[in-house]
Image 1 (cartoon, rainbow, N blue to C red):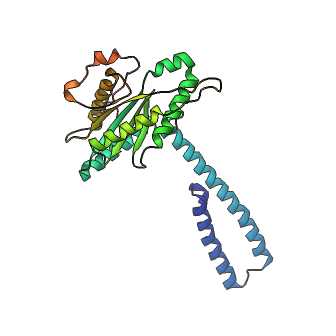
Image 2: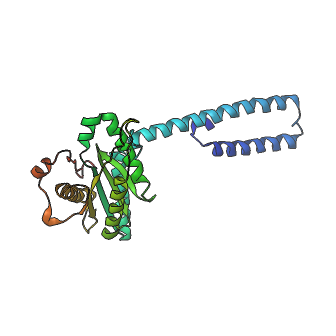
Image 3: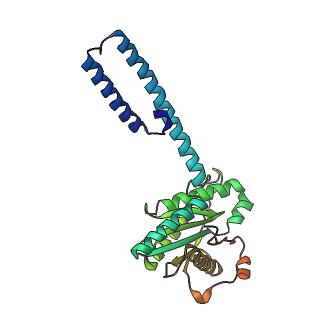
Length: 259
């Protein structure tokens, strides 16, 4: 019966200890604890218990592996787009209920296509992994960080106002600039930069509108020389045709239906 449930080792041992204690108490009360039949029964139950633990841990391992495949990006190990947006929607709903600030950082590696073209896709993968580790080390546990697609990443920052978010974004840029990406022992480590767009929750916002405004701010950062942070400014919102003129900056904004 216990093999049906994917329990942890501690839960399995706890249930088996309770079962064993009840069994021993009954045998002790009846005075048959040391009978040959009961000793043989204890050995048999020990073997069955080990099989149960192995079955439970195997199930748990398989479920966790499937969960990781469904929720994490296979290259960088952070949240994939689907899980990222689900967690962000929940965090945004909580922020609205508590009337606390909520901000979005949309990050894009500058001229990433040139890295793939010049050094190959392996080098591009190494850059993405190094960038991910660098950003993760600077975030809080409550921040939601994931890969939005390609070289584009999003960070959702609960309880962060626009001013605090700008400070975080500038610190991230400095960390990325200091990052050395070793591609080959015979080559000089690559240096990369990123551009960041910021948007902060306003009454009536949805997750889509927050991401869309962060995308507009990111385009402003790209258009103004890259390697900088820009907050959303309504007067500088870029149209779709202009965005397509910036190489490598195609950002797919989700609709409410896709979320």
